[in-house]
Image (cartoon, rainbow, N blue to C red; front, top):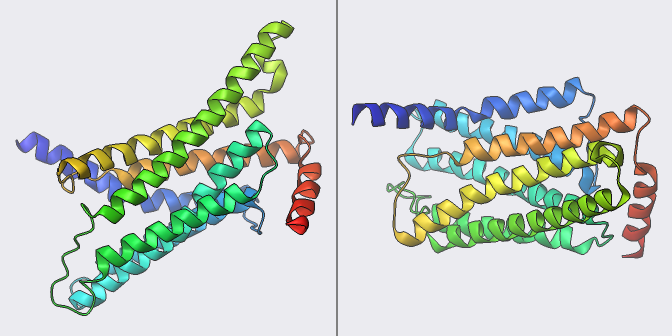
Length: 274
């Protein structure tokens, strides 16, 4: 029992310290000169990293002032961190759909925004259910873990991850068939795109496993709050997304851009048309 308790404590400590990885991701972007953001969904992965680091910063402030703050103030800071995370997930899942559509060659814009907006709305519903009763009261116990709003949010995320994963697998399978028919090596086809597709697929599968386990546990009535690994998995999967985006930036700066300027022009045209 002592060994298990020590292992759980260690894993929870790692999960809690994932803010260090988020802060390091920001430093990585600054070092790579890949820190600029705009309204194009391709830069949403950077918005995701910035907001994730900000949310962890707010979360850590809540625990730093725990001894001197009131119960409602402490809960309010936690809620502020979740609000920032809700916008982070807006950009994350919008970026996932954008990359999935780009991989299969789709030019549709609306799925990106509708998916991101759906995540944001469901997250806000969860925040209202989890924190609504605690604010302004002496009872600061959060009851959002087994709330239906959390299950709905995680079901939505799982659906997005499954759909994007299916899109990537379908595209990779088609490419492999074309490569075998053309009788040349995979590396000569496009090793950079292949690596980025693999990163995206691993990120979707990793996050999907976490959301699926949380859904099953919630529906079954299990309480896994003693062991929390959600942040641990999410942050590292987000780092994979950032690395995939950074590899594209390096390819572009090295003169091996695969039609990025054309993509920008097409995006602007479709934005104006819509």
